[in-house]
Every structure is written in C-alpha cells, then in structure tokens.
Length: 331
Image (cartoon, rainbow, N blue to C red; front, side, top):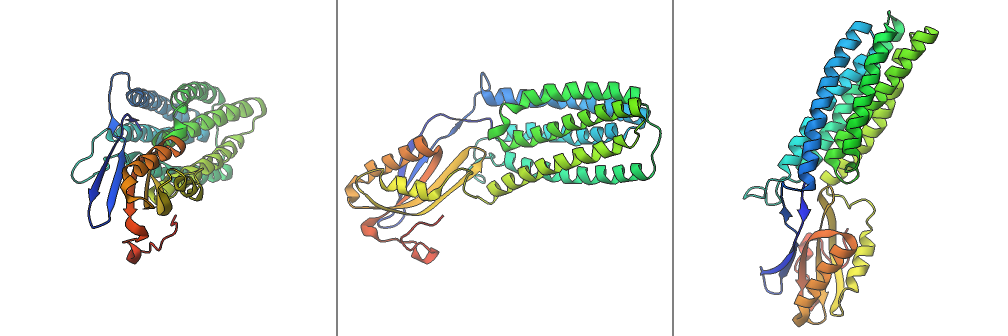
C-alpha cells in the first residue's frame, strides 16, 4: 500500500451502561513528495510501459519465428501489462481517504486486484498447456535466430522490471501480484532462450512447447500461493505468523488492572494493515484509561496492530453473550 501510519489517538464512546469502546487509529497520511507510495506508483507505471512495448515486440517475433515459447511469453506479457496497470490503479485507489460509504477507505482494493491477478494466471496457464500439446502433436518450423534475439531482449526487460518491484512485493499483495506476473514473464523468456538454443544447436523443435509447459507449471505454483494469501485476507483470517493465543496472553499482562481478555479477533484490512477487536475485564474500572493506553501500545509495538477497538466489560459482565461471547478467547 502507498500509505504511512503517522499518528495515533484514543477516544472512547459510551454506547450502553458499562460499555466503552476505545479505538487506536493510525490514519493513512499521504504525501506525494518523497512518499514511498508515490515512488511505487511511478515504478508500476514505468514497468507497465516497458512491459507493453516488449509484449508487442514478442508478438511480432513469435509470429515471425513460429515460436510458441515467444507467443506464450507475449500472452503472459499481455496479462502482465494489464496486471501492472491494475496494480497502479489499486495503489492509487488505496490513497483515497475514507468516506461515508467506505469508512475504512479503499485499502482493500490492492487485495482484490491481487486475487484477480492470481485467477488470471490460471487462465493463461490453461492456454499455454493447450497450445503446447497442439505443437507437440503438430510441430512446425521455427526460426531460432529471431526467437533467440527477441527472447534475450524480453529477458533483459523482465529483469529490470522485476528488480524495480521486488523490494516491496514481500509486504504488499498488490505488488506481489504484479511481481508474480513479471516473474512468470522472466521464466518465459528464459525458456524461450533455452528453446532457441536447443533448436539451433540440436534441432529439437519439441523443446519449444516442452519448456513452455514447464514454465506454466512454475507459474501455476506461484499463482496458487498468491490466491491463497489474498483469499485469506479477504476472509479476514489471522495474519500469517501471528498467534492469537500469544496476543491474548500478552494483553493480560499489559496492565495490573486487566483481569481477563476475551473475544479477541485479529485480521488484516490489507497487506500490513493489522486490526484487532477485544473485550477487557478490569479489576479497577477507574483505571480504564491507563489500561486502554497499555493495550494499544502493546499491540502496536509488539504485534504491529495499528487499529484497535476495545470493549471494557464492567464487573466482568459481558454484554455480548448472545453473540457467542462467553468470557473466554475467540479467535
């Protein structure tokens, strides 16, 4: 995402006797000047332009040489160009502030785009597999020289684009989706280079569709991992690497007045944007402000949870029992 968490504040709302909801907000400040998010969007736009130009070159090179590997890579680049464009749109949409209808803003747009990008890879792999089987059954002439030159240029472009995106892709599903497409392009270019050499030196025409099949399997594996990650976030699953039992235990020791923590939920709005809701039972209701501050600080500093909603249950009485909250942790 192209946002930075730059401040926090606490506030409480009384909704019913004994209910207080504390929120720790870290609003998304956007600054286009010197903002890492702005630099990411610029890189995405530049990567889109490079990939589109290379896609056109591979289409002509594939048709001229008769290479499936080049055409497959060109097809992948076409989807890749769309993915990079969508990634740019998603990064831009994520900067839009919350409004009356979308109180959390548009940050989850990046996850939706990552999900769609992963699905598009399955369609592309299906097309490559179909074409490869057809070429194996009915091989045709391939101009290995043209194929090799175009594949080398494609490989260089993909290396440049992947290096531009790779540094941020580990914490951003949107960029992870774009990087997945570029990685598939790079593998496709490598396969095209190897196939061109095999055809020129050994006369192995079958190397073109076979290497295309191998690349499609690698793409399929990466697409499946991205699909699982984005679907997990959309289903509001617990962030990877986080143990809710550990979070609950830590919260019980956050302040001396905390008697119990229950009804804990932790999820992600988008990549790296962790949120939590919980109920807190206090031995000293008069110390609720100190307890809420301790809870917010612990969750932010230890678990990087930026937005917290806490309901204080007075005298250990939970008002949400009808909703399944019975005084112990719910993950």
